[in-house]
Length: 566
Ligand code: NOJ
Image (tube, rainbow, N blue to C red; front, side, top):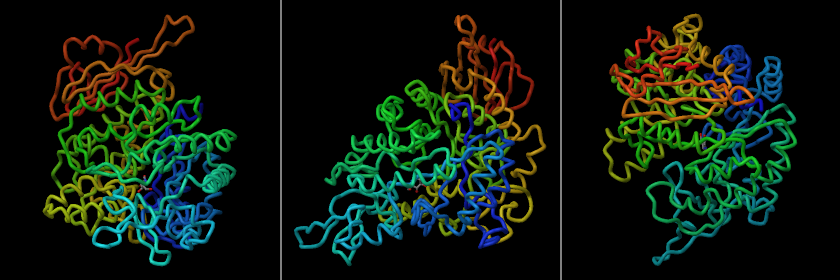
């Protein structure tokens, strides 16, 4: 399957590359002509698939994840002709494109929703409208006690029709009603439209919560109350099966589900090939090992915890979607890498580069399809915001409001938001050291990290020791190795700072020969010894190491090594 031995590169269009060739030239927003101008860079990296975050028409309440027309393009990004050109230019370079499928909700500015405001309209039942409840004091209350993903309300009252509509995200993102077969038919049409245009699959937004079995009150919970009524429901599986059998299976394409709060048992069902639902999915808990229940509260990082969680998924699923970053996360070098200890505003620290490479080694030596988020391949860091006003993300503002309500002091609120805001990953790609990092000739829609003169694509392109060159080497290596792509994952050892594992696979039909790789990663500032019991595993050939130093059998600070054992 072409999507197995391949690398996906995620583009978040508004932050990728602005161009002069749209209706809004140099407007500070990345656009489709900008993407076309950078396809060669993606190809050179070694990626074969692009995941394009939403480019559809949208009022941008949640940066395009609120779609007002699934079959048209947001003029900020260009036109349908630009999009067709992108498909053609990508194809010319043997790059496939998967689109973002956001079907849990639409925008409140979508025609369906506008029509559904009329209780008599056939579109009424496309969404989830309910009368409120009246409390003992005679006041109107929402239909249930659910709380939302953006730390806010989930029901919005509509004066016009005298009812509430459900929105698990922002109030401008009303949830669709998957009990209505017409909604499923509409989705099928959307899928066909893009597959016929040339899409090779979909990344499916929050796809395990689309079916609301009941609207009863949820159990008391600190986060997202009510989830037991809509997470991984039977009806949800049935919708996915129908879309797969009736549409997706007729094309050469794949899907990757974004499955929120997913547990292994659900994931196994969703990815079981015989059930025909998803091809793979994004789980989250590997990125939560140093966070508490509420994602933005930090706790100590431990490499052994990370290995334990990763092992659960590597062994539990036949095939994993591998990722360390995306547009909802923070930069991995600032999260699990050396930059998390760096207190200097924006300036990369001593081990910035090495730890970015070590983390690349981690992601690219696991079993599954790796996803690389724009900027990750040059080791971009979290943004050096100074005030909440510099943050655009709707989720961060929701959190700030909620924490304020609970009396959490401003300094603490800011500390948590700064470290966890999704805007950390949404700042424009740092292409070169010219003004605005070569991203735009206008005013960028979101601040550009002040370290762009030090961390940028142009300065790494021809430097054999750069993070970018390391990614390129590893991707090329992985593509040639059956064991690194398909081999078994074998955890060997971990403590708070070190992790060791192997990848193994049989390479001939009589099962007498195998290819074995051993990986050791150091997640600390200290030089560490490989524990004696495992030293023998490193007697093979050193293939690559993050430090680039002569390998003497010990792990330099933040180093990662890959050894071939036979
Ligand atoms: C997940 C997307 O990745 C995120 O960016 C968005 O805010 C929510 N789903 C709602 O669509």
